[in-house]
Length: 548
Image (cartoon, rainbow, N blue to C red; front, side, top):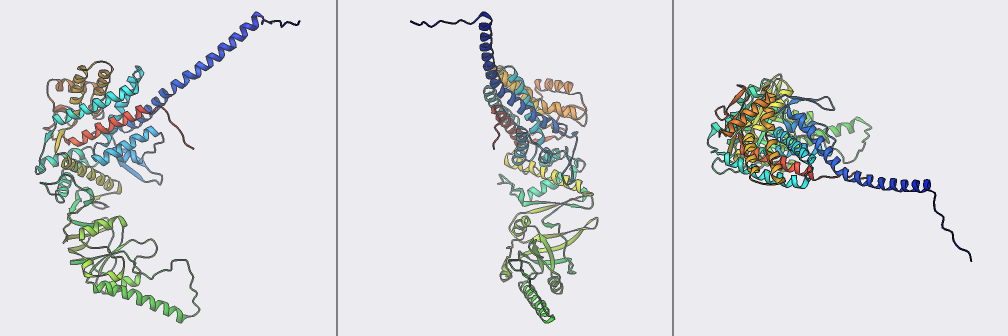
């Protein structure tokens, strides 16, 4: 009977087998360890990318902040220190960094001001979250603690806010000036702030207003003159010049806004008409003349003496023959009105856009006291329509500048000032600026954190410390020693001086309300809420998945 002999491996072979098994186990363990590391690496990468964006625009915070020169692909140059504009033009590839661009855009829509502050605040909170993650605290725990801190911060801000009345014009002007003081055109804040307040007040009812639609205020930038020539026009300002009909001023104007072309019609498809003799050409020219004369007669019959023609991309909106007839009829003509201007023009004039010559009726026309072509310097002209006899409350601001860069920056600055006043209409409370509310928040949140226990308390303390980035950056950008300034500021707030802030003009800490550095409560509430939400969103991400 055959028996199976059991073969045992030699000692060196057994050792080799054991080593190979150990290696396999080690590889599996190492693979598992790498998988555990991946969420941490992703989170760290996201935080670093977002912080890089925040650090890039941090130097433009405050009245002494630096400006950025942005160069577009086509060679267009923009000089600004408006956070939303810088980030909108910046080329950002990392998905987490793009979240900060969206954050700035959201602040611009919600409050219109504080677009740099919200990104700087978000960068500081991300840095605080990174330190907490390095100490082994779970991201969900940090996120929940930041939510509690955000709610508490909003309560503290509301407790230190001062209610205002919209009828108090001086306070509104002070707030608009604070917004303009950090802009390139800050030296013109004495002119632009009252102008912005007047524009808003002219389109709202002070007693009942709870919001304002900024589409009712049209800001038009035009090169020519200086920023000091900027003015409010109670009507419409058109950047297009009047056509050469010899008429440049019309009183008691009847304005027609037409959307059809005063030129020969074209076929729907590309067709060629072959003319074999002169009689056929004469007939075509005669028919063309009759067609255009008929259109011009219908316009004149309606009683219109001012004609606004919408821009056409298919054919000429106005040809030479039509212009010849309208000149004889003494009609002021402005062509190439943009499509996005039609709504504002029709609401302001109380007229209806006319799509066909058959609808040229007197009831579709708008009435105005004066339509005039004005010279704005540098050989540039604008057409103004004033004394509009409609119930719509609208106005225009004509912004002038010696060059395109300055005119566009002045336009952006006025938009921010208008947004500040809109914030006050939405939420009729104000707080002081100069880093005072952030320092107050930092101290009160730290006191609140000491009443709690465990990891939550530690996270809220870090949130409180992150608030100090605003006074720290203000001092840094003003060339002051930031550590000394922030330490003194904390000391003054700890003694109960809630209105103590950084006075960058005098390079010291003063009661900031005496310097008229005021801002709407809504700007700070929105900034803290949006920055906190973005940080929590970034913390919750543990992987980036690419789609096909």
